[in-house]
Image (tube, rainbow, N blue to C red):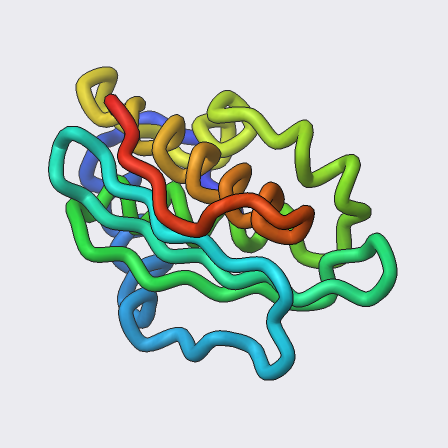
Length: 135
């Protein structure tokens, strides 16, 4: 489901639909990439990634933060499932924002979601799991 649109109320309704279960998503069994990222705004995003060879076969998230952060993170998860790692590494905030019509002051949430995803991908390669970000 995608939203490219006009009215903020419609975008908000879409975001609520995306995020209604974001705090309840279980980590996939056998995950091999994980990260927790905290933005300067106080939002905390936790992402788990499960791979088979170099393909992301599943991913999950838990978001403690604002509605736009939740919608952006869930969208990021949807966009990377089934992708090769090298393709997931190329995900940008613009990719997320092209699906969700957010107010300009909330666009940093897409940046935070991508940073959390990138941290989880680095963790697959042996990096650290928790990062503080300036977004």
